[in-house]
Length: 338
Image (cartoon, rainbow, N blue to C red; front, top):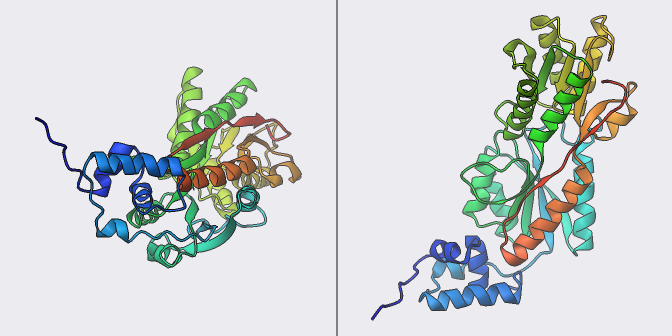
């Protein structure tokens, strides 16, 4: 005769149900945040495996605020700059979609190096979940969100070793599209101007750049690579460095439209012409790309769509516990700079 193996922890039951620990807690507490079907499925598994609700499960809050917090990235001072427009455009998509789903949007400033303030928002039931933009120093914030069982979703490539919801553009494809376009236009010495090199997003764009070069029997060369931090000032500085270390370059793939516009300024001031002497391709296709004095050839991410998906998939996760990792397609938009 066999006996049922007792499942002792929320983690055990979460693995069996293939959902997050916070979803298990909500199901055991009959939370209104979950669908009836999801609650019944998890509760049936709990009975089958002799699961006993412990103190940590009982501590789960069941009230709802119908508010989602967007965590502003302290490390990205240009995220909401009028020049960039990236932050405004992605927030527009998030806010419109949340409104249609019956939720409000709260802007929350959390220092990624001291993310304890997440408790202030979540434990006090000010918000039901979080949306954040990942960067090279997001890990502490993500670990804190996981630690407090807070529902969240990120914009950006998900970090390895963690299981959470995300939406990101196809950065490898974007890097390949930009580089192939420059190669097809006869460019021989193509530079890469990236964001922070520690970021997975930047690494994936570099991978696409490198792949396109290899497919055309070329290789990436260190002197044609420089990095910034997505700001206009860093674009100026990085382009100066590129022209100093590789004065023979005839094209540059830049990881943001704002840095690309800064790069064009430096190229023109050096006496070179864009695109005749040096072609420039940006990334994102925010408003500034079209309305710049020299309309920018760029990789379009469809930022408003990304915002809508972030809202939709976070609410789905809150209600069902389903973890989704969505990669959105990108496309090349050809204008005057390349």
